[in-house]
Length: 599
Image 1 (spheres, rainbow, N blue to C red):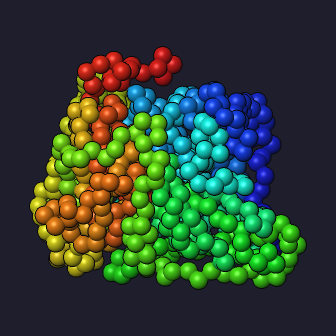
Image 2 (cartoon, helix red, strand yellow; image 1 turned 135 degrees about the horizontal axis):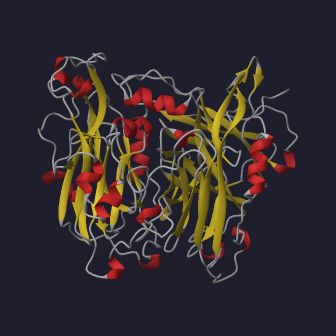
Image 3 (tube, rainbow, N blue to C red; image 1 turned 30 degrees about the vertical axis):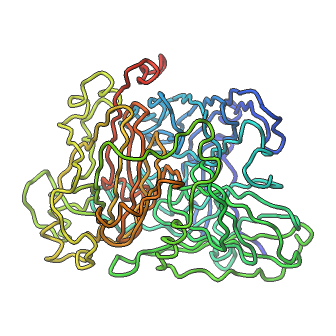
């Protein structure tokens, strides 16, 4: 049967890629010698538009080096990385190295108007950073105007002493699995629509490694699906990344189980399960043993998770690829489909995360134990609200789009950098002129929301009198300053305000310890006793459960201006973010250096 294919990169793109061809100095992950010397890894990313055809529709998509997903960066712990970004697209953009510590290197974090000015069309920018002290699966993506939906790829950091030093049996092969979405939309326009309070844009499907799979068809012709070829008895390390803009996902493989061994480039106590759950921004490393009957074919299925009513129900689509045994690659029989959890089974996600604890290698590379106590604490509510259009103080709310705009907020303040801002926040902070650089007075993220209420009351989800009394929100450049070395507790509280969704919260430049999570409203007197101070998982992206809370602890030891935000792209564009500013320490080695000479 014929299958729909994505078009190849245009000749023009191929010529550009050839002209600035990628230079890679690295060693293969399956052949890393012991104590490999640190290397310089260099890539060139050409960002351009390429015509692709799916679902009977040809469209131009913004991608890197003509491919979706973009190129995988493979390095060894301790290497230095240089990436030359050549912007041939019609859009401003930056590239963020998601989960990379960027220690004393905040200038290269890649966030527009936070750490740098965006890379304009027909301009270039070079990122330079080290991957010292990290092992595992991270990723890179655009950090502007929804473009990460197609501008993304894996960043794999292998241990300095080779795959034999993994704290689990050495796998036969390592395979990136990137879950994404297919948008038949101009993604920057979707961003503009949502920023202005219009929410009628939805994806047309889900993808595994850029392929829609055979649940989708074009005039009866099935779409191509991702195929994982395995050998009987071999083990495979799946490096799973959720690059989707909107959805958390269940992932299952018929007839097989996962052993989860790492998340966000931090090792975990091995955990056996038949389903993994992954939110946007997260990575999971999971071992799969090819131990099913080799005569069969087995679907790899990804199912979006959606908050149940009264939360707004939007179109969300499952997708599937296939696992097949190499000895049986010509088998055309029907593949077995795994039994998937219900799309509203948010408790499956909650319990999955509750089963994850740090592995024995937590302290590798000098990582400290979880601090016994915090120096300061924040209680941060996550929800929606509204602001008056045209800057007015009074307007009709409750979904009146002519007079008000629905926004997302933290502690009732929606993060917003004015269009007139001329200087990135990091630069303004470094040169001690943050107020002038931000374009308006910065507002400090308060320790608590301005008023307490029943945060999880689902009567607040639909428009109406219950939520309208709480709906008014302010807009500002939201920041919070921390002294260098401070230990900080943050309790994130999901609310029912105009939505009942989970919230994958990502902190740049730091990992956090996930101390505890719960359903309902956080109560310090009751819940602090549940904190895991022995072996909490270490993460850069923490899912705050639907109508629940998550408590994290981190050490503010990386000076700079670091974005903290929800990794649902619509929540970020609507303002669910703040900037955590970590002050310099007392020495040169604990202070942010000046911007690079060619910055």
